[in-house]
Structure formats: structure tokens, C-alpha cells
Image (cartoon, rainbow, N blue to C red; front, side, top):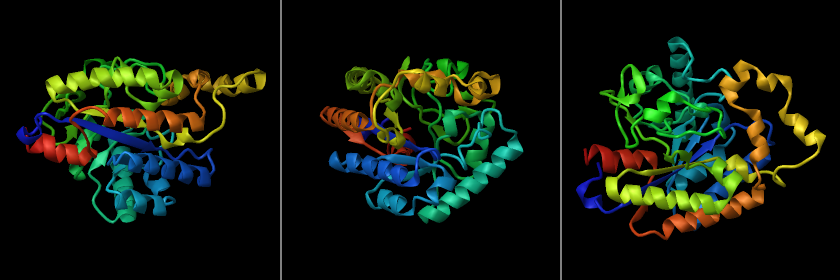
Length: 314
């Protein structure tokens, strides 16, 4: 689906999920966003920041910096609260949340919001319909052919069989191709997800291997490479700790209830995290430089990709 003039390019979409992370002091969250912006500036990368509407209202200067540097600001929901799981929310609640989030985020950015990623990447066909009605052109919540235990989604059967290339979702199934006007641009995976959480566990070497595989696929199919990262991972000191005091933070009874696991996944996955905040900064800088070193790599925002490579080249 790449436009003829871009036939040899490899589209790389760096996307940031700027979750509210209310347990992190605001000054540290702001510093994490500035770090993400600095990493992008260093490699001249234009990216998409998916920001929750409530959090965006506290990130005014940083949102302005994103726009000044040419980044896209997309919607990451209203609150990112436990209730905001779009795969289970009633339609009326989805409509209310998406409308509020869109209006409040547009008020902060001063312009229309065209890209969406659901909190905890949980969506359904109803979500796609409501997003299209509100003028969204792209969603990037599906993680095609991905299986992992390091996210809040665990194993999503819809992901396993979802198309790997961008597609229009089906009106009854967000994980099948259909005729809805909105585009789905999946987060990349080759079974293992191309996300910063994996970087936090295995280090930069594994992510470089994964990128090379995705790059080879893109050269053959034109499929974009979509990387999902979290600025909040730049906050913190050491990696995983030890001792009972550390362990008990992850084995509280409420973390093993079906409702918690359905919303947040397995809390025990935090014990796998090894990289400190400073290490994540260094790993990310290394990974971005590695991506930029490949021939024909073109960094794009999500909306730019939809405009240049999907709508003009379909």
C-alpha cells in the first residue's frame, strides 16, 4: 500500500503512550516527556504521542513542544482509569468518554485529533465505529499476531489472527478486515511485541534483532514498523530489587482477582523488569540510532503514514 514514489521506503512509526502514571510525581512525568522529546530531536525523528485528555491538561508546555517539533498528538483516552477498557465498556459509555477526550484534547492542542490508541490497547468494533463518527482517521490499538505476558492484555485471541498490514476494520470485529472508514495500523510484533517493555526486560540487543526482522518484512511487503514506548519508563532508579519488602508489592491479594487481571494483566510481570530509568534512556538512544542507520527508513507520524502511504497509495 506504499505510494509509488515511496515504494522503496521503510515507514517507521515511533509511538509514545503518555499514560497518566499518577503514582509518579508530576515533575518527574514532565521530565520523562522532555527526555522523550530530546531523544527524538537527537535523531530528527517525528513521532506520535498518544496522551490521555486529563493528563494533557497538566502537560501544556510539553504538548506545545511536541507540536513545535512536528510531532503528532493523538488521543489515549480520557482518564486511563480501570474502567476505561474499551473492549468491555457499554457503547453509551464509550461515546461519552471518546467525545469528552476528543474535545478536551483538542482544546489543549488547538486542532483536530485524528489518531487514537486505547488505554491498555483494548478495543472492539464499537470503539472503531465511535472513533470514525468523531472524525478519527487512524487507530493503533491492535497488536497483530502478538503473544506475550508482559502487558495488561495477556493473550488476546483477536490479535493472533488480526491482519499484519494496515486495514479497515470489520463492522462486527475490530480484528478482521472490513469496510469501516477508519484505518487500523497495528503495533508491530513477530510473536514477541516491538515495545519498550521488552527493551526493559531483555535489553537493546533483542530489540535490534526484532527490528531487523521487521525491516526485512517491510522491504518485502511495505508494512510499516510501529514501535510502542512509554516515557514513564525513563523514570526510576534501579531495576528489579530483592527481599520481601520488594516482592510483597506485587503479590497483594487484589492483584490476583479476575477483575484486576482482566484490566491490568499480571502484576507479577513487574518482577521481570531489569533496566533502570537511566538504562532505558541509553537503550532507547541506541535503538533509535540503530533504526536510523538502515537504508530507506523514513520516520513518520501515524497520521502522516495514513495520508502518504494509505490514502494516496491504496
